[in-house]
Image 1 (cartoon, rainbow, N blue to C red):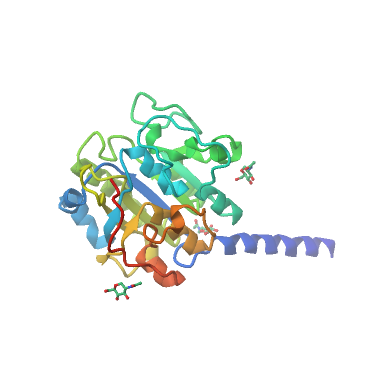
Image 2: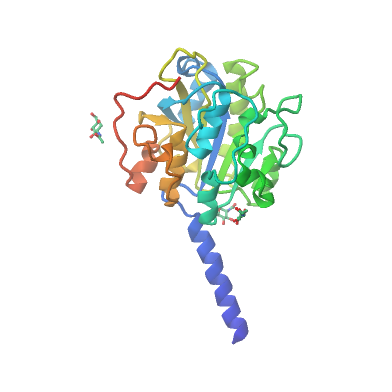
Length: 303
Ligand SMILES: *[C@@H]1O[C@H](CO)[C@@H](O)[C@H](O)[C@H]1NC(C)=O
Ligand SMILES: *[C@@H]1O[C@H](CO)[C@@H](O)[C@H](O)[C@H]1NC(C)=O
Ligand SMILES: *[C@@H]1O[C@H](CO)[C@@H](O)[C@H](O)[C@H]1NC(C)=O
């Protein structure tokens, strides 16, 4: 009797966790950041064009500021807090991020950072291919000073292990190294890297588990472009049937947070993740969650 009770409680607990992971449009989101490329250049690149048949093109997606770092900070915190440089900044524990929202619903998360020297490394660069300016997580004490959370800031080599173990987190942000992301190379180098990275994942049934992959660029290369227009692509079994279509919703990096919030009903951070002009939800997700997007006809300058 006691044993039975224990078993049914365990089943209840397991069910609660599984249900929490079920989103309205996806169960896993995997965000990949590329670097410093104008929309027009990426959209005319042969490598990216070849990926369109397998993806949804986001043709109205916008970076928020310059240089790189504020865009990464904004994508997890809903604000870049007036940061306009790539220097080291540390936000005290009162600053919440998307991690707090995910945690509160028992959703799992990780950031995979290519070439980071060790788990939770906080140095600015490894003097090789890793740069802290492209890893926003360690800049928040609410993550960095919490050992459990900081253990989720891992080298990208961990990804294959996690996939094989059926342990793909609900939310992941993947930062390619300074060459693979196009920063120190070219747009063709970045599209070639992405093709090699994404192609095996698209047929990996352990990765494709109602998974939405969002690929974007942190910022446009042209600082005079007030729209900071960059390319976005969606992949994964969560977009099945939508391949080779275009989503023209006006999106920004704040949409990376609002889309996650809307999918899982996470509440919000009360920052620009609730600024209606800057936080539309990705089109097919909004359609499934009932989120009301707005037509943005006069956006603020984003350069
Ligand atoms: C530290 O992280 C764990 C796991 O995410 C969380 O449950 C806990 O509340 C956090 N502690 C603080 C002080 O924020
Ligand atoms: C798919 O994801 C769910 C959580 O969303 C998890 O419970 C399950 O083990 C995953 N399946 C595989 C094959 O990874
Ligand atoms: C946005 O514009 C489109 C096309 O003009 C229109 O169909 C849609 O209703 C508008 N949406 C809102 C929220 O105003």
